Image (cartoon, helix red, strand yellow):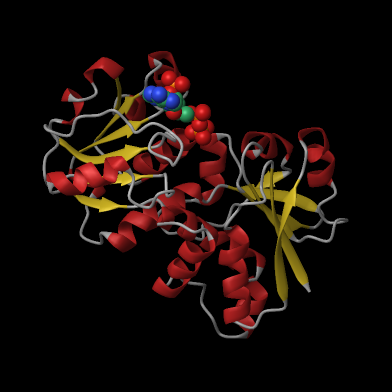
Length: 300
Ligand code: ATR
């Protein structure tokens, strides 16, 4: 039986087993997806011994995505998403969230960008990324990954708004291609309300708005009604930002879809043979799966 796990610290509340074990059961695959909560001083050894621990692959979650990038032996080269190359994204964002063992080597990729992109594409199929400016709020790891999605989807201008301006500038400075760098603009946190004036997409990548955290303090008065608003926070499903956007008349996409869709390329990689043997082209995110995850995570 093939075994896969998610490694994090803490990790016991991860919803990834619910997602992957749903597909394992649905397609009658001989497999198991487990949670492994590994302390920081044991992480390197655990990952290096992944195969001996009985796993053919894993997901990496907080706080280990950057360390996993440093420890990997290679990156996944096959582009299993037409739009978002998951190995290249890992390289560009310096973070790995999905690993498959190949000939004893740890092959890394980053499927978070794919998850972000698919979540919008599947929930708002008419949304056109190329139609105007996007605003990213935040400048942490999640913002870095999402920036790469926006670059791939040919967004014309990307504005990064972060409380600490230097961190946003740093992300911009890490982009080495001048044509892409020119598309990215950093705006001061004080000007965040006015920055929404003529944009097409607003994304919160901070944890503000999550249960137990203060809401994101931003005034949507100037936000065009045609703009799409999305949040990576999914606890609650409708964050204060998404609620305010709805009330303002905007379309919204909640953050749970990103979690669901980021799982797809990993599952398809790990269980490729099993799926092919059953004539299945790849797993899907269905309303049933979404509801199972909502129930399991007590999300509302
Ligand atoms: P991750 O790597 O998971 O994205 P992170 O690196 O901790 O998380 O980043 C959290 C983001 O939330 C940062 O952009 C942070 O802004 P700073 O760079 O100024 O710290 C932002 N953030 C956290 N609390 C905030 C607050 N009260 N107001 C505005 N931004 C906040």
